[in-house]
Length: 279
Length: 354
Picture 1: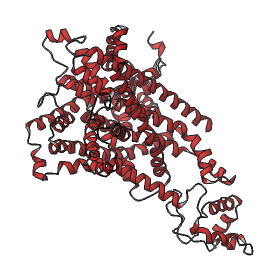
Picture 2: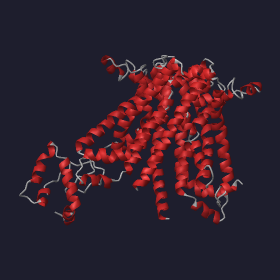
Picture 3: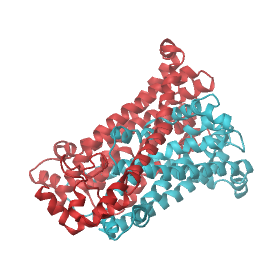
Picture 4: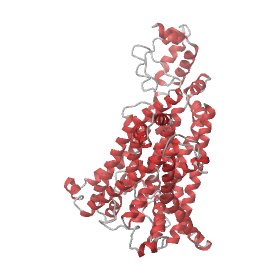
């Protein structure tokens, strides 16, 4: 029965490798995740709604989603420029710049958190110049946005780079021969073909920003209703032994990430369909 | 004019592209030359000749023509001012956002001199945190390495029902935020969790102890190796392994002699990423650790405690170790990426040939 679900192969080790994969996946990922939903389903509707629609929690959603959205937008703009420069131009130190882009992936989030706070606090390297202008960054929503921009940048650049590399020069040349200016070519030929990749990068950056914790808790200042992100609220509830409250907020956050993940998969599907259609 | 170039210039497409290129670069610095080009009495060919402009079209991604020949700018190249502008934006933006924070870590840690920096590591709690971080990654990376290889073998070498579902499930931990990843283990093994009473009765502590930290780290780093291996092994196909079977090789022999040499760079790449995340994870570990100084603090958690105690030099000193780890990770990653790219090109070339 089991073999009929699988195509015949002469290679050994199917049972062992698949069995181990499924067992390990279930024990480490599926069972723990289902514990979350099981615990949440044990709550009454009033309990659940009372927690997730509480004004302090609502304020945290606004900050988390708003800052993540703003960060992802900044990343989409500057990430595009960075990716374009890295793919199209040659300049001294390009390899180094290229490797640097992955720094937010490699740097532990707590380290980025304290480093950003040190820079943007009122006596920090950048903060001291912004303070006289009336711009406070550390311990405000702007600080949260900066942290989420930092965290999400590589997602946009690394998703866009292959898409820009795959652009066929012929269609750009054709546009030029037909008399298009460089700007027209960019707007009508280049942008439409990299839109799926740009949106995917944006969504990945957004998804990462919504769940981010380490880099934000230091720079945000964590004032309830003002600079408290949802992830922190989960931790706070847990520290107050309010497991039910923590679970309820976690379920909302997890559902939001799943919706985004689904959107990203659809975007990627769109992306490959288009790539196939173009080839 | 060399004969080669004259045929190039006579080709109608080149002439048109060039005409457009000249038009679009007709900024102030090019105006003289454009006027010269469009001067009617001169033939097109003669007009173009005095246009060496070696320094005017540098940096294009297209191969540079060798010295001595006049340079053509392709229609797909951006004008110089745009190239300079975008390159400047890139470098300024990345320096401001990436380099400055990195530099701040090292500057802050050395603020009170090198002795104070070293003093931070004489603290037994810091040493315990370093040890726990090393222990956590020494357990979770090999386990996820074995899992990654097994999963990639099953998914890439066989066709079976539910394969794409399995592939997406492996990526699941990436979609779960760090804090929620920690929370699910508290819900399972905490005092009020599913297994909490049983664990308490048998005097086993998982959450707020080392096993919980290791579990949360394993969960977070779960997909790293598998997701590097699966696409490469799918690309490589299984012809080589089938040939090995027909020559009478056993399962372990096939893996060690045929598959492993083919995937070693991707494997290393996955391990590097997995290790960086395992050592640097903060959110998930923070929820399950319980923050017992000297016992259940990993390096990132120790950084947090020191920072919240306003012991900035010590906090940044420990952070600088993590930053060095990040730089090492980036360097190794670039190196392996380069090898890996060669291998992927090879694999797709072989596949195109067959």
